[in-house]
Amino acid sequence: MPARRTIGVDLGGTKLLAGAVDPRLGVHHRVQRTVTGLRQRALLDVAVDAVAEARESAGAEVAAVGFGLPALIDRRTGKVVVGVHTPLANLVFADVMAERLGLPVFVDNDGNNSALAEHRAGAARGVSEAIVLTLGTGIGGGLILGGQLYRGARGGAGELGHMEIDFDGNLDDDNCPGRGCAEMFASGRALEREATRLAAERPDSGLARALATGRTLAGPLVTELAHDGDPAAIEAVELIGARLGVVITSLVNIFNPQVIVVGGGVIAAGELLLAPARAVVAARTFPFFSEELRILPARFGVEAGMIGAAALAYDGLAELEAAAR
Ligand SMILES: [Zn+2]
Image 1 (tube, rainbow, N blue to C red):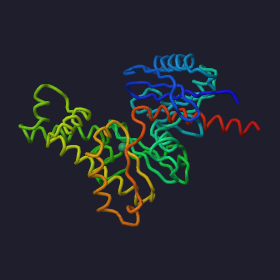
Image 2: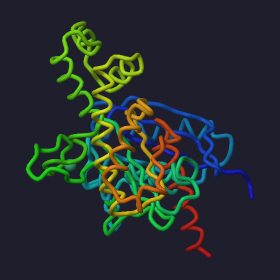
Image 3: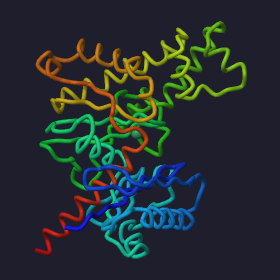
């Protein structure tokens, strides 16, 4: 069988990352584009152009393209139902892109793709029950159940950031009707909010000094200050970690996984985030669940969604080939 590749594309609200990926999920060529504020037509043009560039440089035949979108996608119709930060609602995305690219195209939610990448070749490799949580601006995720990505009735399963953990909380920021969603408490945005609050309470802290210079206390800056030893920044990260532990506790009680993988930008905080999460899980769930549970950082960083999209394309090809036999 000749060498072949798929192209994985992770299409976020601000940037697109594409890569030519081999069957063992090694990345051979990367393409990045900024897509902030683009309307639908321009966004699709950028995606087609990025795939063309990755295809030219792939070094082997490209057999299919996989996409990850920050959206709910109806698997029965292929329609993008809610395009969070992305102007793709009501588009039958895979069909439109297949037509334009002249290749089979497969599409899934970005969190599902990240979970697929971690399960196939990352921190959850070889495990039958795993949950992947992606802590970025919001919280995404995916469920590996019985060794398979679990997609639910219409394809929307795994929206772990929209787990409701408050009875009467604030409306979610993320174009979601929920009130009291987990991502309001434990995401990168929540870290920024808590760090800003702590900066006001502690005028002598590194957080307050950074704020006074006109900087926004976004997740990466808070994480940097925490790694540098600023007690207020450490407290902000630990608070988010403890809340993450509450979210993980619920997931552990429901799914009894072997591994929880934590990825996304916020995991740059590493053990500052995971240690308090583990402590909360150990304290709040049955030892029966926690004894054999591992809570691990993701293997793949910003490329998880792109690599998972390529894995999705290999899965889709295998299904097409099985159906043709
Ligand atoms: Zn929500």
